[in-house]
Image 1 (cartoon, rainbow, N blue to C red):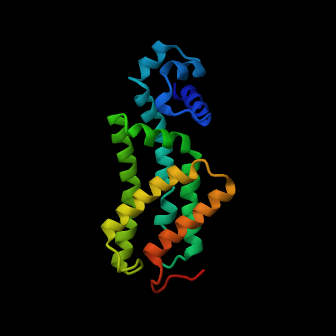
Image 2: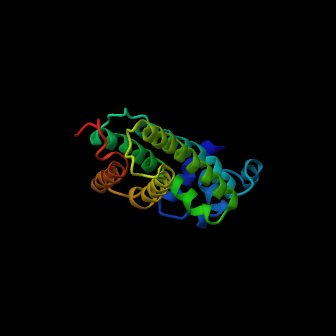
Image 3: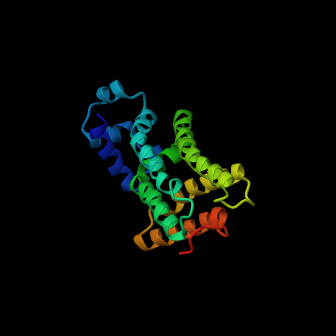
Length: 196
């Protein structure tokens, strides 16, 4: 069922329609399925979105790992390459992720799913920061808990607002900016970090 609904929803979202404005009728019409079939699988369009978002959220969370798995002496260029993987994963799934962010304000169950996605990605960043802080490979002047909270929130909002529709030049410029922010926040001046 998802194999027929996913391209229909993606098509509608790519034509700059908001998920909140899509009707079940419009979605099933594009997908070529009966209303009764849709409701045999899903309670409503929020339920459909949660199902569609599982793969997208998994891909975005997995894309955090190149950053959080960097060696302790990684330089800025390696950080940029890792953050570009995250940005590219978000861009690839931006229609679904944007729909989740949008619907989280309107649907409590979608909001819970979105918070769970954010917490999975945030846990990877937190483990990286806490481990690096304890090992001295992350700036000792920061407060790890508050810094992680800010970084995760900033990255989520920044990906949503700046990268989902950026052309290639703006995409690369945004990756440069987020790299500078993360580098300055966590790694600048740490002994043993490679200078790129």
